[in-house]
Length: 613
Image (spheres, rainbow, N blue to C red):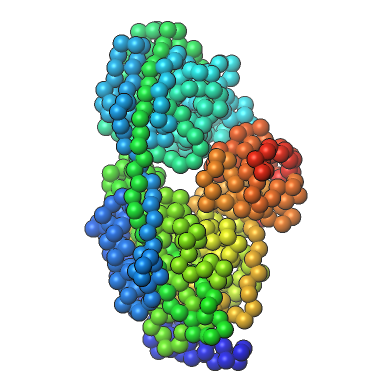
C-alpha cells in the first residue's frame, strides 16, 4: 500500500507542476507564482468589491459571494456537498433586533422621550419594563484587582443605574483602562450591563459624554449594541443633552462628575434624590438564512477515500459595519473585508481548482467549504459539524484559512500545529521547503477550525497577522500581498497532500486557546496561563470547557471537559471575554479560586496559574 501511495503522490506532484499548481515541490519554479497570484487577485477583487457590500449576512453581497463560489466549484468539477444535491448548506443567523411597541422611556413621570431622537433601546436589552429610582454609577465598572469599583458604597438593587460610556483615562501603565480607540473589556457594553445586573440593578441607562461633534452618532444603533450570550437586563441609551438638562433641575452636573472621576480615577457614585425613570423595551430578534458552500473532491484510494480532510475559509464579513466594526465612526460604510476573509476565500478557490484539475486525485477525499456566519460567532462551521454532509467521524483533519493576505517577511503563524502529534513537524518541514518562517502558536486560535477542534478533530489555522485595517472599511484588496497568499496556498496544499497520503491516523492533542487577534497586539494577551479549552459552540452563560490541556493548571486543579466556569477569582464569568479579562489581570504563580457547574451543581477548585508558553 505504501509503495502505491508514493507512486500516486509522485504522479500528483508532476501534474501540479505541469498545470502550474503550487505544491511545496513545484513552488521552487518562480514562473508559477504569477498565474497563482493572478487567479487569487481576480477572486479577491470581486469578493472585496463595493458590489458585494461587505458580505454581511444581512446584505445582498453575501448571496453574490455565495453564488460566485458555487459557480467556481462547479467549474472545477467538484461534487455538490450541500443540501438536496446543491452546493448550499442552509442555516439561520441572528442579525439584529426590531423595536416593537410598547417601547417607552419616561423621565420623572411627566417627560416621555421621543424614540430614536432622544433615546434608543440597546440591542442587548431584555424585553421588559421597569420603573424605579435612579443611581449614578460612574462608568459602571468593577475592577477589583485594581481597587476600582463604581458600585462601592451604593445599593442599586431594584434600581436603574445611570452609567457613562467607555472608561476613565488610564493614570499610568498599571491601570487596566486604556485610551481610545483601544478600550479595555471594562468599556464593553455587555460588561457594563452584566456588572449592573450582578449588583442587582433592574435596568441601565447609558449616556455618552464624549463630544464627538456628530450628534447623529451619539446614539448607538440596536445593531451596533447587539451582543450574544448571557441574560440581559432592560437597557437603553439617552442623549447627553436630555439627561444633563434633567439632572440640572436636581442640582447635579453629570459633566462635573465625569471630570472628577477622570481626574482622580476614583469612583464618584451619586444617589439621585427624587430621580425616577420608567423604562419599557420590546425587542424582536431578526434572523436571516445564509449558506455554507460545500464542494467535494472524492478520494482515489479504495482504502482511504471514505476518510476526508476539510479545507475551509469563511466568506462572510461585517457588511456595513453595524456590528463588529472597530471604528464606530465608519458605521454605515462598506467594510470590504479583503484580508478578513477575502484572502482565505480566494486561497480556498485556488486550492480547489489546483487539486480538482490535477491529473492525479488525492487518496483521501477533500471537502472544500466556504463558511458563512463566522463573524456572528462561528455559526456556519458549528452548523457543519452538527449536520455534516459527510459523517464527521470520517474527517481526519481540518485546515482553515482566515486572514492570510498580509504576509510579511515570509512569516506565517499556524494555530493548532500541535493539535495532532504529527502535524508540527509536517508544517515546519513544508514551511522550510517554501522558504517560509513558521510560528507555531501555543494555542488553537479562534476561527471556524475551533468548531472542528471542539469535536476532537486535529485542526490548523493559517494566519499572516493582524493589522490596523482589521474590521475597518480600509481592509481593501490592493493592500493584499497576493504573491504571499500564493505561498500560503502552497503551504496548505503541501500539508493537505501529506495528510491525504498518510497511512496512519492523526493523534489528537488538546491545546490552550487564544484568539488570533491577540497576536502582535501589545496589552491584549490572555495574561497568565490556565490551560482551559473553551467550547465556542456552547451558548451557556459562563465558559463551557471542551477540555483542558494535559498538565496545565486547569488540569492539575481538577477541571475537565463539560465543566461550566461561572466564577473566577471571586468574579462572575458570563463569557469568554470575561475570563480573558480576569486572566489578563493575574500573574503567574497566583492561586485563584474557580467555581464551575458540573452536572448542574457548583464545584469549587483552586488553580495555581503559570506563565504562557
